[in-house]
Length: 298
Image (tube, rainbow, N blue to C red):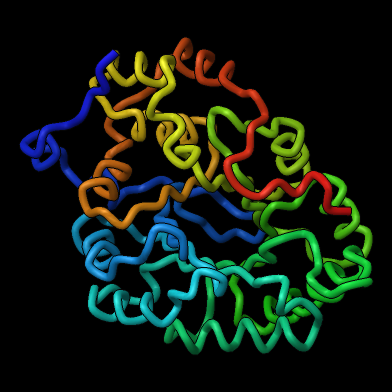
């Protein structure tokens, strides 16, 4: 089956105002996180022009990055060039395990703020449930690090704090050891990886579930079911999968360094997937990971 793609004329005719009115999801502390964001990464390169384009032409207000991606200073320049006010943006950053521990975590967060040219982060996440320190208890390191994030949260350096790649057992331990329940858990999520029990747990605990790699690193582009639904709606496979995440209430952060792909990924608010489409995509779950798998982290 041929994959449907929007023509350049069709793309230009689709209003980006639908992105400007991007829905938000409430966090337990009352903040509202945009349900659609733009991910960045050290894999696949970085494009200054693409970030500026996303902020100025596509209405993107939610940027996700991490110290690990080595683009904090570059993002600072792109944000300044875009002319967007800091208060109009939602900026997420992540703490790498190499900086875990109370003192190291606080310093790393402040360093990231400095690199990005901001006084605060909207969301700061522990990047991984495991420690890089040999012989160290993962649980103890998570608790020690989380206490630093709790303090950064109370100080206003981080408006919200959360975790990434944490499973139910990791979240349960954190709840026992600390006082602030994570506001967000960012985990791999796409039609082939649907951690339903984790999503249910997060919902019960008031933790917003955020998904990364919504396109399964391009694997969705060749899936017959995705292609069929894309043809039905005259949309691209990427738009179908991003829309699927959004209709499931999952905050999603597709990545791209190509302007046309970023625009495409943002134009997902002008159509709705049918119940049959949602059910068909739900059946694609086969538990595959296209990135890190935290299953063996104690």
